[in-house]
Each structure stands twice: as C-alpha cells, then as structure tokens.
Image (cartoon, rainbow over all chains, first blue to last red; front, side, top):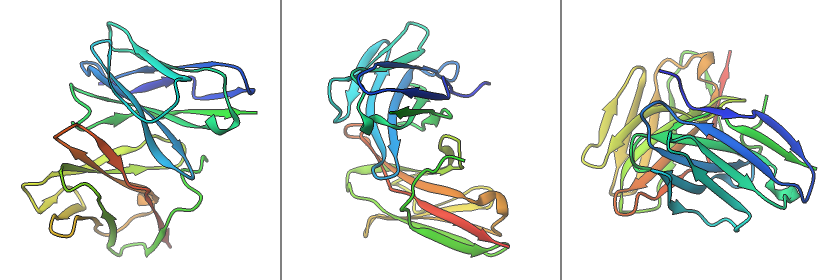
Length: 113
Length: 112
C-alpha cells in the first residue's frame, strides 16, 4: 500500500505570494491533518479534515486554509506569505480520527524570500 | 539534508549500546502515546505506540515504557545501529478531544 504523498517537495516563494500544497493520504484513510515544522517551534498542528469537513483547527491565522476532496486528497493554502512561513509542511493521514496512529508524508519544504 | 531542529537535545550513544530517550508529557488526560522517528529529509515515521492501560510495550528492538504517575514516557532502543540516527518525537493524544501534542524531539547520534 502506497504511503502518504505530498507535492511539491520543495517550493520557493516571495513575500506576499500565495501557495497551495497537496497531500494524498494512504488509500482508505479518511482523516488528513496538516502540520508546520520549524526548528524553533517543532511540530505544530494546523488543521484536520475528515469527509471534506474541517474537524479541528490549530492556532494559526486565517491566511492558512485547507480543504479536502471526496477522494480524501487534501490541499492547504497559505495566502500573503510572510518570511516566518518558511517551514516544512507535513501532512499525516489516519483511518478515521486524529486520535489514531497518524502516518506522515515526506513534507513540502517551503522557503519564503 | 534538511535540519529538523537546530537546538534539540542530543543523545550520543556508542554503536551496539542501548539507547534510552525520554519524554515528559503534559496532559494528564492523554491516554494514547506514540513514538516517531524522523530522519533527515523525511517525514516522521511511526515506531511504536502504547495506550494508558499499559505500562510497557515491546516491538522489534524497541520498548516503550509509560509511567502515568509522573507523566513520563521513554523509548528504549536495543543494540543501537547507525541507521537509528534520527530525531525521535513523542506524541500524546487525548481521547477527550483528540488533541495531539508533540514533544520537541531528541536527536540520537550514533558513535562509531
């Protein structure tokens, strides 16, 4: 069974631009969570989607948004990028709940210049 | 490779020795715990989990110990190998609200 995949793997943007990241969960997994990972803050929860609905949300500004499609694939969008948004963005999937074991993708490394 | 964390605590262990990585968790309502391993340039990889009704669980070369009294979790790796070099994270999950909290991580460095 294929693991969680994320595209693109690397991205360079400039301040003020927006970006969309994509995540395909493990087949059969319906819950997709997004995390931001930085050296200073570690892993921080962004949001979780289940059955195309946002079920939980972390403490990030409204510039961070996401959605989930009927096939469970998910995208996250960051608008009006800031230098501090440079990070590794990780997607994780689980069968039905964020409270279950999550399997992570390789991440998308975003650099904002 | 990508740096997961520039200021993480580091544990240096001689190849072949046992490693013990510790984690203090914060939420007394947490009832499910996971250890993840993150190698440079990769996402976190599930290693082993334990539920709060247990105090020990063993996998292949790894053992997780849970002490709920002091809210402490540890990961023991037997006969540490070069491939064990990575950052190790603990995660605690509350069944009450499915809230997940990740630890900051510990970098395991294997000495030849």
